Image 1 (cartoon, rainbow, N blue to C red):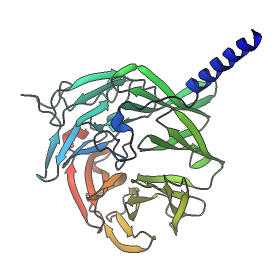
Image 2: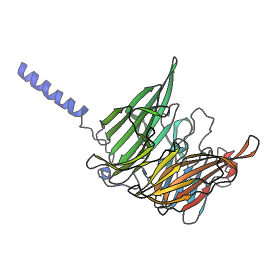
Image 3: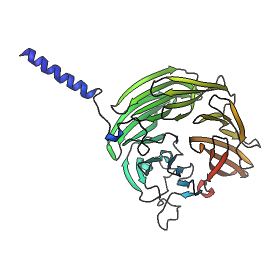
Image 4: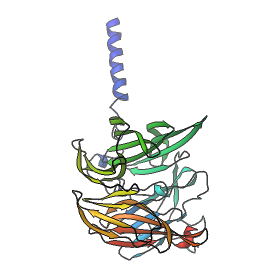
Length: 409
């Protein structure tokens, strides 16, 4: 009898371990069991929105937010036209009732325009009080989908194969120290009760910054713990989204290189990183199939406010911040091996006192940038100019949309 009892107990234990280990099946639809890119259901990794400003694309139309404006905009590439994303009859497009309205910048929930996503033919974003909204790409039928947890810091959103992934940063003050907390949570899209914590890390005295890459039923997370410009620790993690397991691929104390830009493709992703002490950029590629890193090249660049952005098989080197210098911002186009192809400039408003340039990804038009200019019109009074532009793979600069001046006041 005792032998029979122990046999039954052993079987029950095996079943329990199997159920709680790698036996989970988190694939929501059969068509998601593929390594192929699913244009309607995979997050658009060619665009990298931040907390404030985001961009996505459906067909030949861009949809984007542009801090400090509190509205969403669209731009039709073929027609060359754009404006606020609202099709409500008789809407004046200047109140909270406008479908293009994102949220109040002064609200406790912050500003989450950078969470804008295209998924299954619809547009989604997180608005005030952590509400996930969606609407049609023509600016109609705006509706609430669910609530998500947002915390008190930065937030990012990725809609991927039936799930909503929320990456949030929170700050907690304990005594004389500030703790920065990074959490990744997953929800079944439309089901706020389905929340699961996938990742949690804390930093005392530092700030956690991260990049994530989605590929089929996998996610890769690159994480940096930094104090000012110094990186005290980094980590590289792999998430199997099909069974819920997480693997630490590498961790390093006091690394020499910090992340500057990342772009994903069907085979892997490319990482631009910088060694501040040496004044060097390095470009490396990670292959999904082999799990190996390959260094492509290194180049010297002593300018501390420089950025090396990626355009598929080319790179653009430029300063991301200018004080007034009386000249237009310049850039250098590099080939796949890091050799200079050409040099050019980006026309700026004359009389500006500062210009900042931010990279939001690349597509068939080239590198997608936002140029934010500030010009002093009178003593201590300024005008702001916010413009979207491409730098093509051939090095041509094309401005395609300027946020209306009245939306930036």
